[in-house]
Length: 176
Image (cartoon, rainbow, N blue to C red; front, side, top):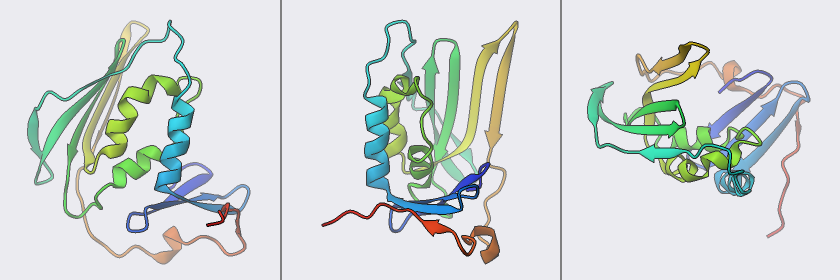
């Protein structure tokens, strides 16, 4: 997945994520287990009492998306609401969304707000086929909708995901 200047390569078989930094010209590979532990440490701090709490609701609502049954998961905090329709197409690696979510660093200092939802999102084995978020903004409502419109299995040019030559591996190696 390419982001601004840092992008990630997901290995769902090895349960690792490689972070590629195009500015520093470095790579770092971490296990999903380590990434989740780091995320939990970031969300472990106490949440100030004036912060809203996040609530996860699974109403059991289902619908067909991309040829599979997707189930609704709703995340709410104050006036913010996000609806994820999670389904498991056989062409998307199982657990990819959990890897993507866990390896995306939480926003500090608000990270503890997500503590109650993190475990459910990290445990998800399916993928969000539709994502609807809304939050009041001024006198209107800011709405973001993302929907998977098609899924195709194709060969990807190696250059699209290859780590450029000369990048330094800064992975911290642990002694066993």
